[in-house]
Length: 140
Image (spheres, rainbow, N blue to C red):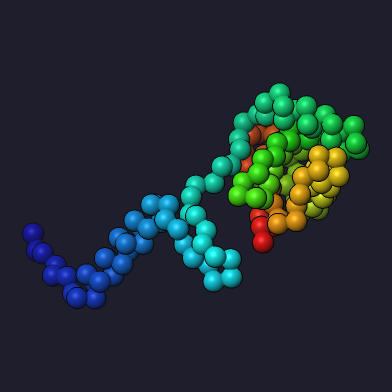
């Protein structure tokens, strides 16, 4: 078996690749020039089916004229900006359908639930199979 010697540039490249992997997996803080430090962490992406509280909020959304295919809505504050999860029975994941759903849900939450969207929000839409259809981030 012949051993291939490592060139100096190969060693540097391997060390850089290893350091990048460690940083990406560690959840370390990254500094963004315009926004300050942000925390690199896994996302909390909803899947499956909503709980009773989420279906009750969707029913209030329906009574206010919201899309009937929505069967769950959840929101919580995450670092001062809302994280909104929406479960829909509509398999259509096209842009016009998404825009309509996004505008309807965020308008309802701001108007009826008094959720402040002034600093932006994160929106996750889960489709009928329980898989993520859309992820939208408007945080400032």
